Image 1: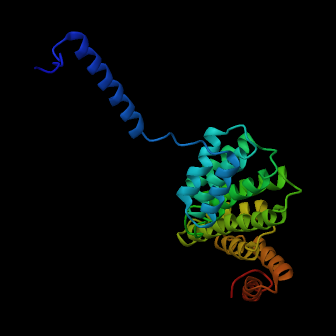
Image 2: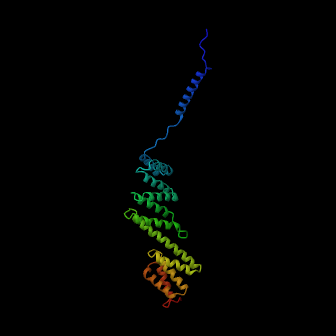
Image 3: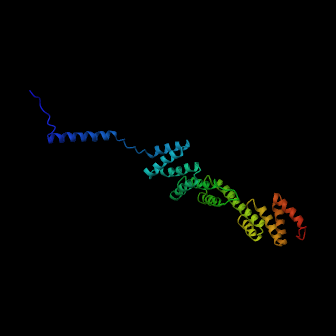
Length: 265
């Protein structure tokens, strides 16, 4: 007459229902949870990083190269990945960040097969920021030091010749700065300070392009201080060694104006 009655109120039955529900709920959560991201091998990360770098997606490139450094630090790709992190910053003109990466590389891998390239990039990170002569030349000095290190540590490098050329450029820039400051001092009525700068140029930068100008200005300082004989000697040297330059021609005119006794006419 009456069908069976489901005893929901029975404690054992209720417990089984709750356990079954919890299991189903746990299973559902595992289904909804995203699968963990696989750790790609270093060669694949390296290839992706190079592609991103060549496509000028620098942040994406750095992300892939950093994964190599962090997840595969002992792989053969790790040193090059470190370099390319810095290279991505360099190509974005983020020079401060680039120099930190390059300095870290040469500190850890000074004898790596691309160490000379990294040293060259480190020097170029400073060289690409050179300021006009009227401004501070601290970056010029840093570039000079790094190019010198390249020439000393990696004399067989393909970048050796370019490093020597840029050493000359940096030295010329530093010499030019000294002459500019000397000229300023002289025009401000401080010949002794000008002399100090000019004599430093003759001593420390003897093969730079500013030597003719230096000789002319130093002669002017001597004339100003009444040291006419020393001034005439400098002008004669200027005419003899650099007569083909504009400063050499000016020196000849100044020499003729001074006369044989060194007295200005």
